[in-house]
Length: 252
Figure 1 (cartoon, rainbow, N blue to C red):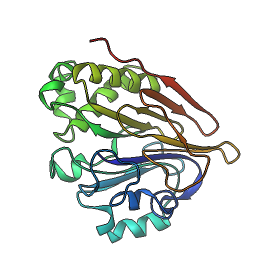
Figure 2 (figure 1 turned 120 degrees about the horizontal axis):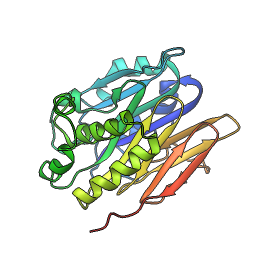
Figure 3 (figure 1 turned 90 degrees about the horizontal axis):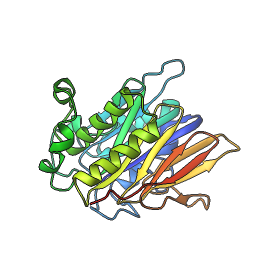
Figure 4 (figure 1 turned 60 degrees about the horizontal axis):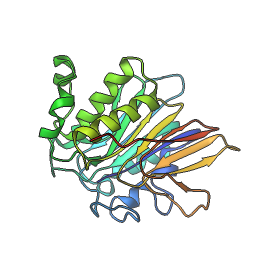
């Protein structure tokens, strides 16, 4: 269910991360190498990036497959950034909400993506949805499971949680409410990256010499430095450091 990637590092064209590598997100939309659930990610895509001096990211999202959008190829070739988050979507419910359901979701300085699915959606999410205010529920960008997951993460961030804590706590709470869910979450503020591996693949490529890090569902090339993140793990990363923290299974 979906493939996604986040990058922070030296300024680079968006396409150098999402299109040009031999197994980039662009190719993963029809030929992922390590996707366990689903085979084609053609139900939408999106990219979010940061411009120098502006903490609020820009986004480009569409409801169709990334390979069918020539405008994105042009944009990715010329737009440069020091941080991005991009995703291609295999929808839990095909066609649901179109472009509005495509990651990245955004608020303030944050970009977010969910690779996975909530089991027994939407009923399983009711207890956690009840923890949100009416305003937060009415502000959901789409009616899909990923939009609700984002609302829960954003609620925690606005309450003062650090990014890693927000992702880790939301992941274990969702896993308790909906056992068997796949909850690979990805979050960036343009300077750091937080992610969870819970039910699907997650990898990172760290290059401290360049002060760069990429975190992705799967490697975009065959660089031997790509490292797989163990399942049930929280990753937090900056340009110079990557920290992995085990996540505990919720008690039943």
